[in-house]
Image 1 (tube, rainbow, N blue to C red):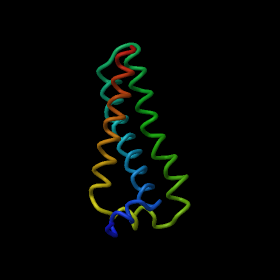
Image 2 (cartoon, one colour):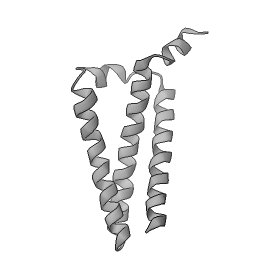
Image 3 (tube, rainbow, N blue to C red):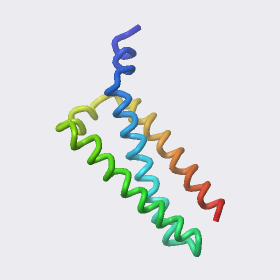
Image 4 (tube, helix red, strand yellow):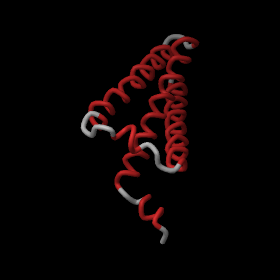
Length: 107
């Protein structure tokens, strides 16, 4: 196997992959929550506000749990190949959109 495959299995790569998923998930929650809170009515508006709040809470938790514990982690380790970012972003958007649809369909 090539060196890239072995480096892709390292814990640092999976940590970055998880960070990108959570960042895109929170961004999706913020955007869709704001749209739902603005254009919705009744229960949909409340669901949109809750998505908006959760979208702001996720990066705050990430900051205090990961980024404060390892100085330079965010700037030094986010220079890996773009496929990791793209894969994490796609998964984050899909999860966020499915949660959004699930909440909207229940209201």
